[in-house]
Image (cartoon, rainbow, N blue to C red; front, side):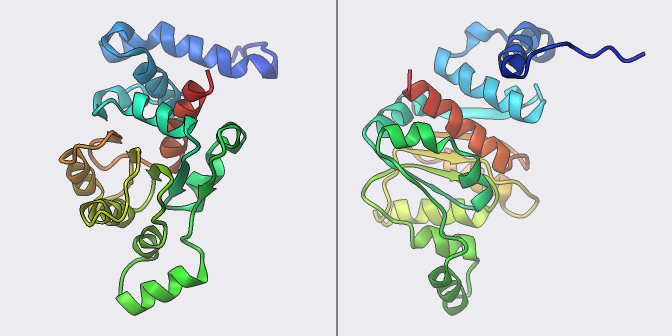
Length: 214
């Protein structure tokens, strides 16, 4: 007979996080103390979002992304995402405390027009139209072309995000775009290989926002 836990709705997330901490070493072969405090909190929320401890093997933190993100969010910087699913999963109530906003232009008419004229994907076009001087973070959870476009815009000095969360998913250029990201001297969080997705991108951003709100 299946035994269900009797737990109050408000306690479910806290209990989930407690379970992740208690099982982490057994499931991954790693110690929590192997990570900086903020980086483990990010990883913990990703594991919570996916139910997958093996993410610990492939997540990459480069150039102090937690400190960079916390600083950028507290200064009121904005977040640009590649797809609406990432944008809808972000805790806007925390971001708004600092004066920041979340935007995704993939569905804009201007984006569709640029994509047709240039023969590029809408995700690529949306990123080109999202250049701003107040950019805290770029969060890519779906489209490799969006991450590639962001990196090219950085090369062209048209975009200077405080952080990139680059976790596009798929079989065409997803792994390759993340390898490109790892070559940049910019604070970033990524997951090697083909895995990724919008829930992971949103989970990473939300973990960072909570750290900024402490």
